[in-house]
Image (cartoon, rainbow, N blue to C red; front, side, top):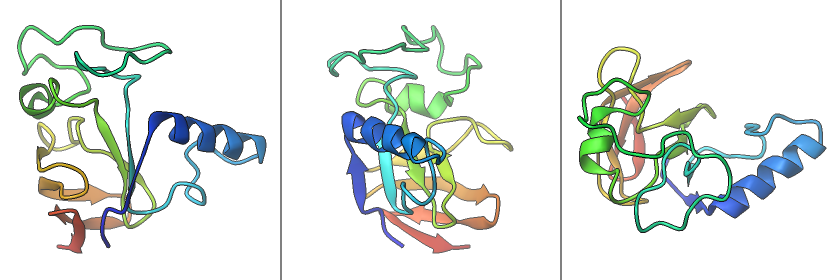
Length: 140
C-alpha cells in the first residue's frame, strides 16, 4: 500500500468537522483512509510556514533535541525547520504520528518528502507490523 493523499490543513479540518456532524469520530477510519496523511501545525509550526490560526502546543524549539517532549529528537534535528509534524494513516486504518517518540525508543528516523517517505525502524501498531519505505508500506 502506498502513500496517496496529503491533505491540506483546511481540508483535514473540514473532513473532521463533517465526520463529527455525522456522529462519527473526528479522525474516523471510514473518512480518513489508509495511505493518507496530514501535517499537524497545532503541535508545532516551523518558521516560514503559514501560522496556524488556532492553539499551537509548542511555540519554540527545545534548547536541545533530546529534551523530552512528545516530538522525537529526530523530528527536532531533521524536520522542525522544514515542516510541521506529520500524521499518516497506516494499512490497518490506525493513525500514526511519525514524528513522535515511539513506545520502545526515540521514534522514527524519517527521510524523504511526501509521498516518498521512509521511516526507520519498523512500525508496530495495534494489528500491524511493517515498514514504510519510499512511500510504500510493506510487511515485516
